[in-house]
Amino acid sequence: MPPADATRRHASGRPATAAVITAFRPGAALLEAVRAASSQCSPVVVVDNTPAGESGAEALLGERPGVTLLRDGANRGLAAALNQGVAEAPDVDAYLLLDQDSTVPADLVSQLWAALQRDERIAIASPAPWDPDAQRFLDPRTRARPEVADMDVVITSGMLLRRAAARELGDFREDFFVDGVDQDYCLRARRAGWRIVQDRRVLLPHSLGETRWHGIGPLRVRATHHPTWRLYWMARNGVVLIRENLRQRPRWALTSIALLAYSTMAVAAFEPPRAPRLSAIRAGVRDGLSGRLDARFVPEEKR
Image (cartoon, rainbow, N blue to C red; front, side, top):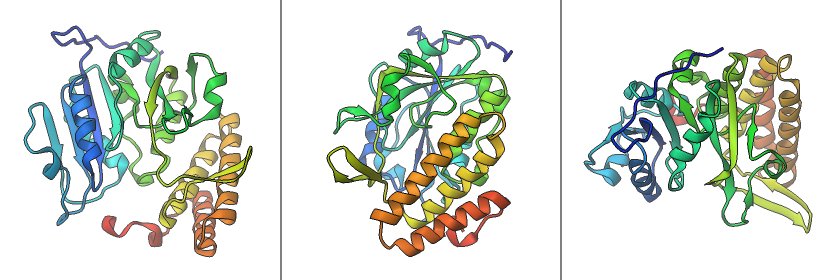
């Protein structure tokens, strides 16, 4: 059984929670995320992956008490940024992980902390990603689950990570760069005997970027329109995780295969230029099966 950890509390009585916010060429939404997180967390650590020579988070944030900005002028990827942020705040009870454009609801930490407290074996408590425009859960399966549901994986943005679990599980997987970082971490937690829960009463407004719906009436397909290089990483890292977890998490793995097939179909039908985009997915599947990495799909600012 994973170990329990003693709870350190602020004068307010809240558990000591550090917010780790990852940024890359941030806009004004980062400032709002920092303001909202600062009312619930201390410290707030912003890790900016914006390349050197470009305007980054410092231009938005300035000097703010309780906010630490880490920026070394290189894009080292989401996992590396998360690892830097967690390492900056070792003496807390939990970490609230956020994207630069996360909308942080009031009382998010206290609500998720209550979910963590249901069982000392819970490593991660997560809100339910919510589409504020369509007024629905981003994952339609959420409505059919219990109010507090055990999950195999949840997204990084908005997750509350117990410090004891973070210490046991170690770093986020930096060779994944961006895609699949959250899934790998969650699956490792499950293999180590920890639980992951999602409280669907706690909503996290979340955007999937350039997502567009195609079709008529109920016969509609969601296409994400990610950059071509991202399609490679999504396919490669997804196949790596399917290969690594097929025996222990067959249901999750089969669902992931179905989702990869769905997204490939959406690219083929609705996302020109189709040939290079499908080629990127094929390369990702190939390298996911072999464990290799195609340098053509590493973003220029990371090279």
